[in-house]
Length: 167
Image 1 (cartoon, helix red, strand yellow):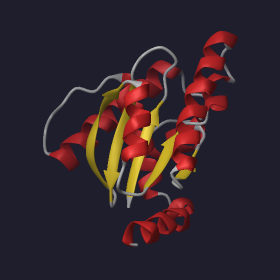
Image 2 (spheres, one colour; image 1 turned 180 degrees about the vertical axis):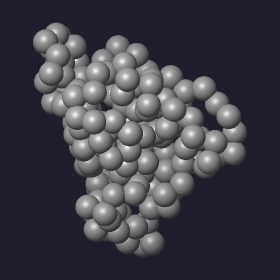
Image 3 (tube, helix red, strand yellow; image 1 turned 45 degrees about the vertical axis):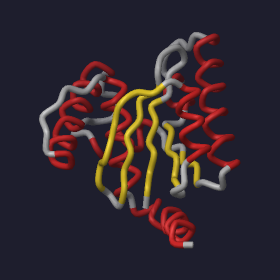
């Protein structure tokens, strides 16, 4: 089962993590157009996971222009995934953060990001066998991928993708 987890951005490269059978195999950043091409050209069926943008902006006094740009980026990724017949998952930030990070509800963003980076570094070391720095966006993509690849509620949907992978 291959999962592409993406931390979307409005004006910079998209951060991603790529998971195969519950193991992190790659992470980094990629320009949106290259990400779209990668999804379109993928020979391996994917489940594409993107953090729900509503949760990313609801507690802040959202800048409408930024929110609109995030929605457009998310829409382009979602359209491309669905066009290819891939599963598209949109977990809420509160969902994955409370299950992956050792935090309580309403933990301030700086503390959440500190924990996300700490957890992401540990995941990189465990799965890729190397010590590496990760930025905030890469940390989010890695933790989101870990969450999606390990959650029971996604198992059935991910099994459908695995069936497509076999055929």
